[in-house]
Length: 265
Image (cartoon, rainbow, N blue to C red; front, side):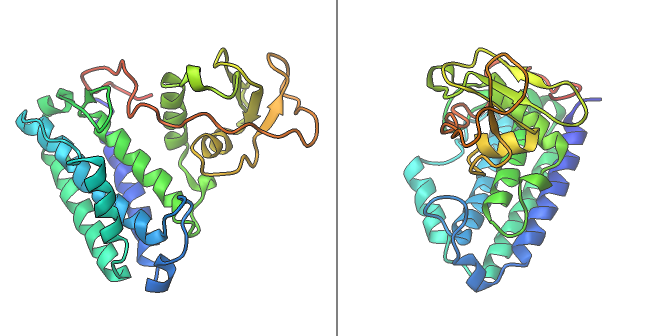
């Protein structure tokens, strides 16, 4: 048994939650700002629909062995989002539902050996095709919050938060870091510390609050400064958090196992 069935189950549930939120949005709702700077909710829905096709391209690459880029170019991607942003609510929902069905079919029908094929996003490094499921879950989970329509970081499943923090740590941009330590608290367990991340203060918070801050989905609510290398007692009152380091400088960790592992992370 590999991690594939679990990731597929997570993706089905995450997609259904996203579609339920999209179905509740009216034409007027879609013109309101999202959490993505400069984007309306319509832009977010158009982007998610577009990423569905981009992930289908990667699965086609894995199945056929023929290089099939996610997008023709960054410019083409931006133009597609802008053009799709003005769809009506019913058009957005139809596009999302159609894409979800096509992706589910492609995932179901992908031959076992193809999950180990190397594919690549718009940026390196290449990664095995099984990681497309992780990337898809990331798109759905983060952009669901971006809709600012009742679904927030507190609604992220624990498995999603754990996996995203795991990959964040493995891809940490040390040369551009703004913090030296990350302390993950909560759940009645001993705090987990990420040390030697670069220059700057140490920050502490629950896993969901930390992921929201690191991904730019919050202003740092629930994340506090702590003395470097010491207890998790918050720092001086009113001390300001730095800007979070750049998120997702790589689309995938560089040393993923080629074949689907039994579990991830």
